[in-house]
Image (cartoon, rainbow, N blue to C red; front, top):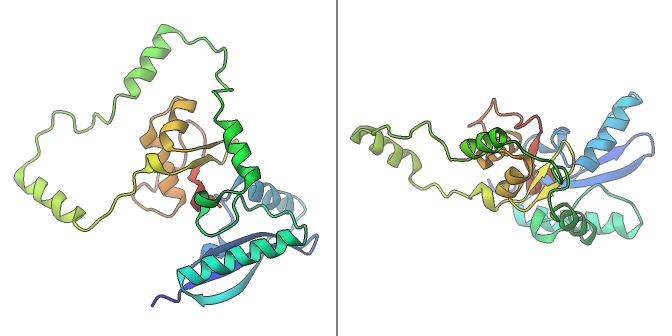
Length: 226
């Protein structure tokens, strides 16, 4: 069945206004955590005054293409009325059509490492980071049996892997955005795998159910957080 998508809106009961438009399937419309930082701020404000986000499904039984079109249409509609939505894009394909204001924030965030600027690292700290960045050593030197190789081959047949390093990432904790997990890793002194595993966790991938943060921070792919 291909008509499983819908377009939904999140409303503020205190102001009786829409503040976010999204598309999804299943339980996506009711998932309120792990969103972009602007959405998270509104959610937090409502909780502080004892209220919750109102979820309204505007269109249902749509194909993915129809949902994309309707999402773009609704975002455009609200913005034409002067409503300040928390959406970081114009809708549809996430990072591929980032709004001008969001592009400026991303550009500003990528202009150098502002948090570590001027911080002097000891020789030991530099050595520790260097060692940590030298890939995954778990399987280093372990010979794989022919049976193990065959099992891996069968398990991965037909899969198409989207390299996490090519997906834009947002640090939900501080709101900074990066063009890849690798860029975010260099900024925070982490390994890209740590960040991509956290992103996979919050985008619903159950391969890494325990990786909820890296370096004390929460990350997500922008297209999933938008």
